[in-house]
Amino acid sequence: MNKYLAKIKSLCDTLTAAGNDVSEQEQISIIFAGLPVEFESIRIVASAMKVPLDLPAEMLTDCEARQQELLSNVSFQANLVQQH
Image 1 (cartoon, rainbow, N blue to C red):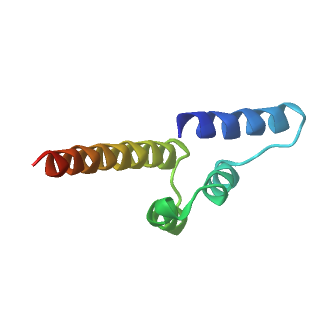
Image 2 (tube, rainbow, N blue to C red; image 1 turned 60 degrees about the horizontal axis):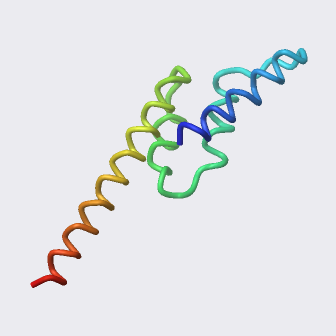
């Protein structure tokens, strides 16, 4: 997620340097447009209210970390079941 967010920021910075300003809301829309459905709930919340750019980025990073944690736990539990 961090790589994806950094890539979007870099592209927006390049556009701004070329004289085409990209607002925070446009950046947020761009970020959410490229995400899979797993992040739909965050997109809905962030779209419903004006939030600063760093909040959706933080929410997405936290969500991804939680998903990875859950996947690790499921894999660990599956291994325990197979051993017994």
